[in-house]
Length: 275
Ligand SMILES: [Zn+2]
Image (cartoon, rainbow, N blue to C red):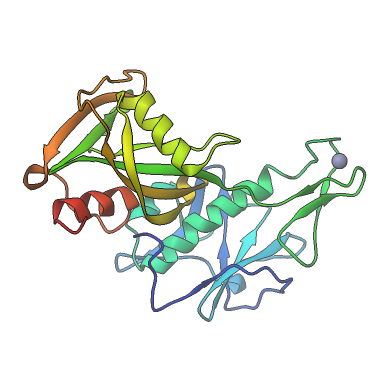
């Protein structure tokens, strides 16, 4: 999956650090990221390539020995040899650890950008020196990075798996699994039961947690569950959310593992009889 970057290790423990010439600099503008292509691989500008002057730079994280910094002011004019790309490029980017760095940095950048001012009193927020947090010196408001939990649900019925397609997504031709965000005050198990009932009108039982996945494309931590239909298997589709929900026999599942998303790995595990 996108976060599987072994043998390299992701370390997002925050300490105040100064950039060195050879560190990577992640630069975002709006929804886009600045990167370079070299022989089909991506990389980013090095700190030495950018005139930092008074520009604000923040340490983000390390991947093994490589450090990543964020240029908080962006760089509208870009850089020679670099191109602006949409975050979708990170899904299949190689090397994988640099794609993971790019999308993870994007989530952190979005958090910094949307917390420049206090939501309580409107004063400018100030970065903390010891942890990744911003504080309001006027009213004392402390803001930590927010992660939205959500579930991916593989609903099974013996040898069958329920696959869905989203409504109102032109070009989205791939099947997926039931999914949705956790509401305030709800458990993950509660989210599973509610989303399955809302989207396809089925009761489920025997929930089994599978794996989680940081999905920075939507600032989400996805939690994958398998479960079984409890009672009727007749689908009642929420046509606002879904265009299709169909039962597939294990052998007939028309998708392969893409090596990127938890959804596809869960479908693959069922298809190949490992779940
Ligand atoms: Zn405040």
